[in-house]
Image: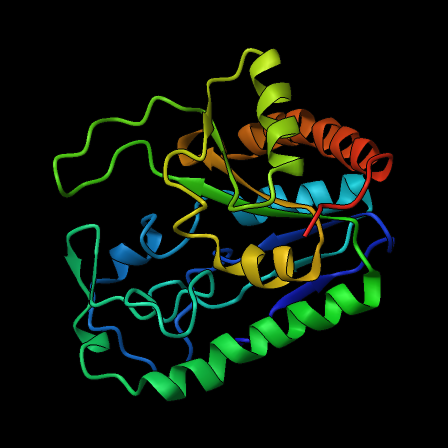
Length: 244
């Protein structure tokens, strides 16, 4: 149940990653929450898995999709991160995580996922990693204002792919956040580990989740993102590697 889904694709090009593809809670894990919370953004990136699947098929790109909820363990966090196993998420208490065996969750879910991702990278030698996420239009807690962006591009130090993506999305008339709705300089764990650490150009793509909550929305955003990812990949192939 917790092994990631691997979608095969052509090597040597774009590879897709979906860390928050699932709201599944494996057997033996009791979060102590109402089932309805598993359908909220705190448990899953709504629309991200379908969008990843459609893009993978259209681009003939290999992809990896997680099969465990971010409330069980957040695969897009470092193993020592405070919110790796959240006890509160967007104002909702997760009582089953309060006294959890952290090392056991890492060993069962986090470590195997990242091993599988590393193996897929080794097997396919991608030249661009694109991590697909979604964000809620407005958080429930903390008095935060509504998020105006339709998409956001996140990155840490390596801006090669991100700068191209921001420019292309904005040129298409899409309200696009540059390291918004949050900064990849703060939360970029998967791409830091598998992209920047290996010198592979990478970017995280965040789409507002109400825009990809149905098939029509997913198809529309696949139409937008597919050609952009191809252009980025082709452009980067013609440029020199990132200086270290």
